[in-house]
Length: 90
Figure (cartoon, helix red, strand yellow):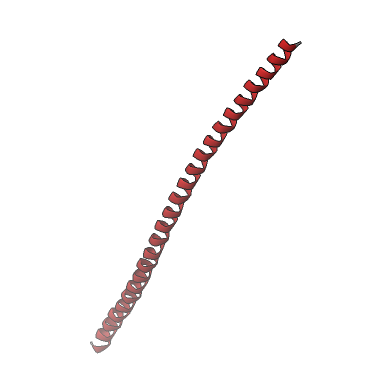
């Protein structure tokens, strides 16, 4: 009977070792998961900053474009006015 008990004890020891390894692996994966979650949060924050910067840039571009169009309109109006006065002088 001692051989049978020794085999059973060895099986339980093997199972215990495997469970220990699985627990270590699980803890390692949990640590890695925490690191990855922090990286995700950092990436989200970076993305939010870039989206905000792009939005600001687009708004600035729209304002600049509007001002340029206004200046072109003034130039066209001025140019048209000059052409009319030159025509009336003839």
